[in-house]
Length: 129
Image 1 (cartoon, rainbow, N blue to C red):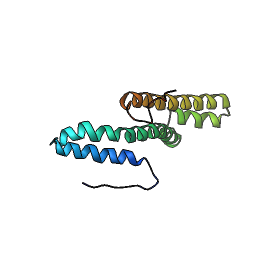
Image 2: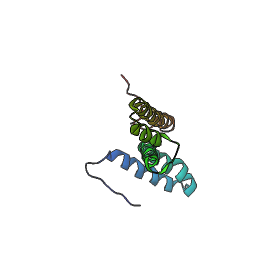
Image 3: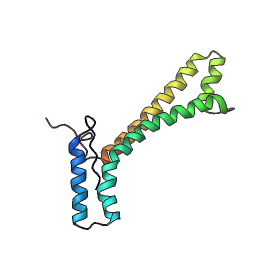
Image 4: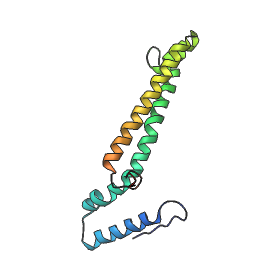
């Protein structure tokens, strides 16, 4: 069993809990599939959702920037590029607003799914007053 300790980065108790639970999985002779499904995947979900939240917005930005250069007639990037050339600033700001709202909606959807999947994680739980 490998134990890694990161000094000053992240909660040490989470590492201790993971080591403790994987030790109990070995004691109770849990199969690899059971350990994966009940221990390792749930422990990885906060990191997966952080990556999804970052990458949904970056993918949208990448698609719009790619449309600046590669799309001949459709897409928000093409629309922004064409309307800047026509000096139609209202349409440019409308396209930027649509892109911002789409990115916000995608981020919100992933955050909502994260709340339902990672309800147990301290970063998702609501504070009790």
